[in-house]
Structures are given as C-alpha cells and as structure tokens.
Length: 245
Image (tube, rainbow, N blue to C red; front, side):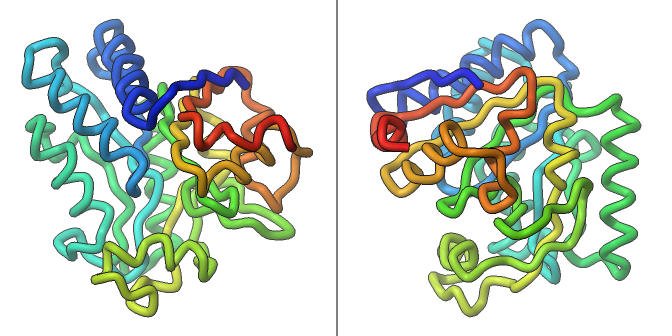
C-alpha cells in the first residue's frame, strides 16, 4: 500500500484526477469504478475541467458505481445516480449505456446484485477502482462487522453512515435509507488497481487503522492491504494520525 501525502485536500484530489487522465490516455475505454460522497467532488470537478479543456476524451469510459441506496430511484435527489449525473456524467456527456449503476428500485434486490456482478465480468473486470473511506473504516457500503460479504450484496447501514449521508436527504439522517446495495470487498479487491482519496481530520483515525492496523473485518478498508497495487492519496489532516497507529 503506497501512501502519497499532499498539503491540501485540493492538491490530493487534483493529483488523483491527473492519475485517471493518464490512465485514460493509455486506454480510452478504461473500466473505472467510482465512489460518491463529499470527498471526490473536487476530483470530479478537475476531471471535467480537463475534459472540457481538451486534455482528455472521457466519452469512451465504462463506469461502475460502488453502491446505491435501496428503495431510492435514479431521479431522487438523494440517489447516487443523481449525484453522478450532477457532478460528472452530465458534464462530460458520457453515454448512458456506458455508466453502470445498481438499481435501488429493483423488485429483486438480490437478483440485481447478481446482475451487477455479471455486468462487471462482461466488461472484463474493473481496471481502476477509485475509493473513499468512511469514518468507521468502511469502503463502498461494506460496514464494520464480524464478517463481510465478498460480492455485491444488500447491506444494513450503520447509524454513523446514515448521518454522514444526511445532506443528500435534506440534512435528516432519519430520511436516509436503512439499507443499500454495494459491491462487496471481494469485488473491490478484484480491480486491477485501486486508488483511494482520503481527506480531512475526521478520516485520520480510519486511515491509520487501515494502513498500520491489523487485517480485520472491523475495519473493512484494512483488507486493502491484501491487494498488490493500492495507492492512497492523503491530505495532511487525513494523515495526521499515521505516526500514532
């Protein structure tokens, strides 16, 4: 696990965007796994800027988002599909058939999870998986626990995760769905390369446990230590506890 430290969150996000631009130039039809949340907004903004400046063509990307809330449709302002359209896809004109999502309104959620795994496999797997990290150490919506699902699955969200997503639901954690669909840890680890962006003091403890702590399902991100090619891009705040782990 390689760590790259930056003075500011903006510097870290811009560097991540440069990484992705370089990968896309090498392989225009890159299969890219994507996160949501507050942390990657600057990353998406910089990718859009570079695409509009003609530095890179993102129109041939194939994307798979990590997760989606169960019971929330794509037009709901709290959905991750809405988030991605707002912050990225609409800005770069990515064709709809190249952006892959879990359907939060699927009548058969378990069948939807199986469909998603088949879709990833049909594209030959994920080339580059972009990740964030939750304050409790989750990746995707793989929450801490005594065991973890390997493949895409239904997950019950922890209270702290619902609070972290409250801004998508008018600031009210009670309105955040209790369940979601998420890639499993095995699916994430199946990506050829993983890049994590972690910024802010509130992520420092989780980052330290991920990097310096033991492998444990109580810190799902710690399992990234098993992957052969992981780079973690950190700002100074997120790296602040590394020497205390």
